[in-house]
Length: 370
Length: 221
Picture 1 (cartoon, each protein chain N blue to C red):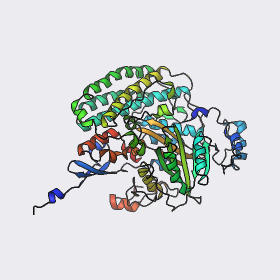
Picture 2 (picture 1 turned 90 degrees about the horizontal axis):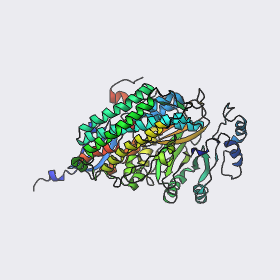
Picture 3 (picture 1 turned 180 degrees about the vertical axis):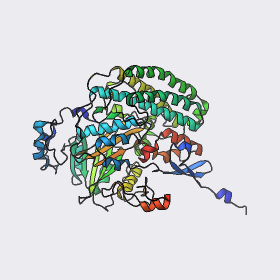
Picture 4 (picture 1 turned 30 degrees about the vertical axis):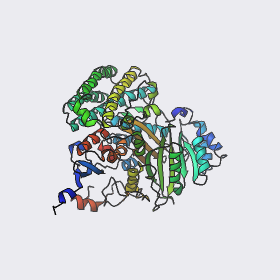
């Protein structure tokens, strides 16, 4: 009898992460492999758990605002916008038009910065080294605008409950417009490198397919959902902060594969630039803060407010007991929910595709773990 | 976000609080009524004492009617707060409600599952499901109140998204979901003791034993 051990050893369990560079942070994926084929996965998360929701219950509403920047740290402006909108909803106030327009400018710039980080690292994972240098070069210009505006580059704490703390600086509009003009050719440049690149297409097309039904079933939102052909974007579906005044398209894909998600995000960068242009042209004059009491004490009640963050639907569920601190503050993180679909996407594929799929989900572990 | 009603809503709650008595679906009516009458005059510029309960208005609409017909006794409240609709259901009615909402009323996207701890209440936890309908572009919340130790049925059979969300609720509150395929902690280590989002759990508290054993250090504080 020939010894059959080699053929019998069907399942091999290996760890990818938590210190694997392509897991984009401290994500550990336990892979069950049959040769090169992935038979199943299990995600181990929580390495970055800081108890953000518990901290929220122990800080005043204003004190907590800087903490939200530390969840999705590459899109801190979006986090801040969602939080401010949620507390404003609890207080039943609205930021003045000027503040809303500036918020839109900064949030969309942040979406571009977030997508640039995604593109650079995603391409790097797949073996294209060049785009990451280009992407970081362009992102730097966005960060400079943030720095000029509020002094911080990454964890900006740009907004306040009720509006903005800072007026825009002299030359803000010109600088933003200059960025927009300069940035669009750069997107074309990335596309020239990647879009029709045979290796890129070979690695992305048909990989990690998640169709529209599965997306809804798993609660997956953002570019992943749109790549599956669902034209849904909270900025259009339930506009906030004056998004209904701007013209922009929601790009969608057809196949729900990694390549479509790439195309959708590329187009989103262009659309964000389009929004920024319109918003910066029409920043009205007026106050930047609504009438907000020094001590924020919302009436007893609860609200769920969500926005379209670069990664998907970012929601805040806040319960107020009419004290200065939230009674309960829940964050609905898009990365956490989207990551849940990883198993479905990689099952039956190859190990090498796991890297591509983690990249295409565009997760930030700071937000997954909170 | 249903912000259209915002400009006039500071004045809106009091009159509707009074109306709320007629449909007979709102148990919380008697308490807010006297308190709610006060803010009418001062609007919210110089707030007098705000009411101690959530000032809701009855929820009206096709979804609400359909639910009322179907789950007469299972639903104890159908209300709106700041333009956001929610219902309060009995614990055992939650899964059938989610199912009906998904299959018949197009609420096919489970946005979030979470809990709120009220240690002084007999039914200690609020369990909150946030749902969204792509077809209707509508969002609702399904709430239920459960005592400590009660094992609510898992929603994984209805929405796969509930899997990790319920695990997080278990991790943070210690609420075990019956019929969940993988009821383990998700963010904290599996052997960790304590449920951090319960109110008696201090923010400085941690599982010192676990830290000592696994990290080889004394507690961090």
